[in-house]
Each structure stands twice: as C-alpha cells, then as structure tokens.
Image 1 (cartoon, rainbow, N blue to C red):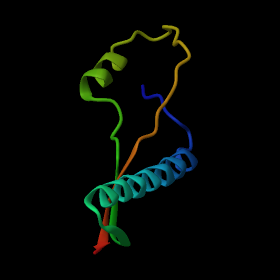
Image 2: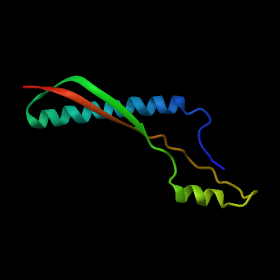
Image 3: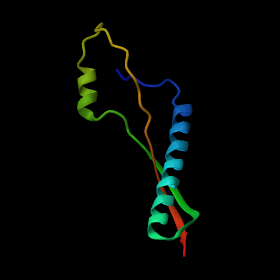
Image 4: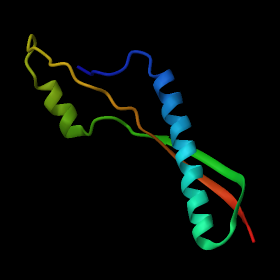
Length: 88
C-alpha cells in the first residue's frame, strides 16, 4: 500500500518555485560575500525526492489489513541546481 497525494502537480509546482527562489537567494548572498554581482541564469536542472526509503516501504507493507491509519502529513521536496554567471 502506498499513501500520497492524489494529484501532486500543484504541490510540485509550488515546491519548484520555492526551490528556484531559494537557489537565487543563496547565489545572491554568495556573490555579495565574494564582492561580485550575480549575473544571468546560465543553467538550471531539477530533481525530486524519491519518497520513502525501502525500509519505510517494507514497514508500510507489513501492516496488517484493517489496521487503522492515523492522519498524517505529506511533504513534497524539490531540489534544483542553478548556475549563474558572475560579474566583476
């Protein structure tokens, strides 16, 4: 049995936007610390958390049918790698 979000597209889009904004903010801080100006975006790629690790998956499968499932939460994680040019 697998639990998750029925249609994760909206949550993934929000996580993606937050990850890109965070990447830009971090790059701006590093550029400032280095005494340079952040230039234009050169490259960007993304990756996603692949969900529960195998041990967690096996544990979930071992639960007996009919066992009550407590309400919980789901976290969508998006990772991006952004490469920016720097200016003098």
